[in-house]
Amino acid sequence: MTKRRISRLSVLLVLFVAVTASSAAAQDWRGKGRLEGRVTDEDGKPVAGATVKIRLPDNPSQGVDLKSDSKGRWAYLGLRGGDWKITIEAPGFMAGETIYSVSEVARGNPVNYTMKPVPKVESAPSTVPPEIAEAVKGGNEALEQKRWADARVAFEKVLPVAPENTGLLIALARAYSGEGNTEKAVEMLKRITDKDPANWGAWMLMANMLLDKGKLEEGRAALEHVPQQAVTDPNVFINVGVLFMNQKKDDDAEAYFSKAIATAPGQFDGYYYRGLARISLKNYDGARADLQKVVELAPKESNEVKEAHQLLEALKGSAK
Image 1 (cartoon, rainbow, N blue to C red):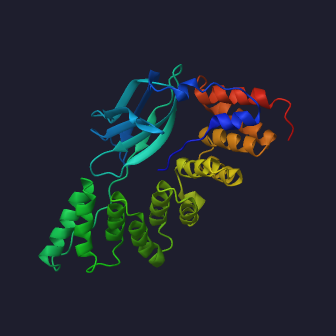
Image 2: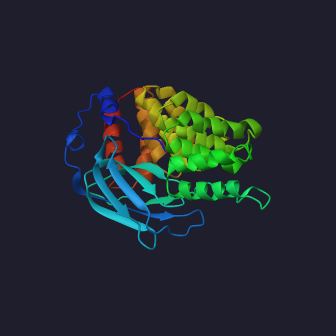
Image 3: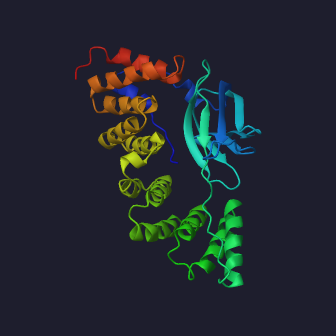
């Protein structure tokens, strides 16, 4: 997942509204806000012992690490209000990230996260030389333990024997990505998509890897290969939209926020961010409609609702 961060103050300044940024500028990360959530696998079963890292997006040294309990639940009280980056890791699963806004006056919705298993290479058949079978086993174990270099070395031994094996190529891509070699990771994934252009999982993984490295246009190009109906997580589109907003490409940002809304029309996040984009585009009627949806859908005491009311008040009398 990519970092979701927008300078809301810059949006408000378009409307000449004075907004205090004292909490965002504070050096101390502690406050009265609470975060809680649950970690499950794709079957809905709890993932116990998952590591939940809560960090300030702009200062990774500030925050706290937690462990999920036997029911997959976790909670922390004592965070300042504002955006927090949440990273969730567990053995045997792919790590995930999201950004969540914390309120110090209202209890927000739980951060529920579904973890996807680390891709594994199928066990080698009995006809395969023992050293290859051992490499497959060792590579899978290293990948689960995030020993990226060991996993890469092991799988590279298998590659000449199974150069078109999808599981192997995905596993190698994960290993290369873990080592920071995005170019090689993408090369592995392109072997899959060249052979099977309808492999949406490979395209999605490629897009996420590229976006995480700040390669916005390349990441968007990979994502465009995935039919919108195949994307079930609206955060995929929201994260891309935020990257465009940070580059002041508000037209592109608005388009991706609209995709997020189409994917999950009952969630407020897409409307919130599209409202900010539309303010920057001076589409005030559209912004008002989006912000009103935020008021309807978001928790009543949330920061988003308060900011939506503030923006709606500032938009009174604005044409278009």
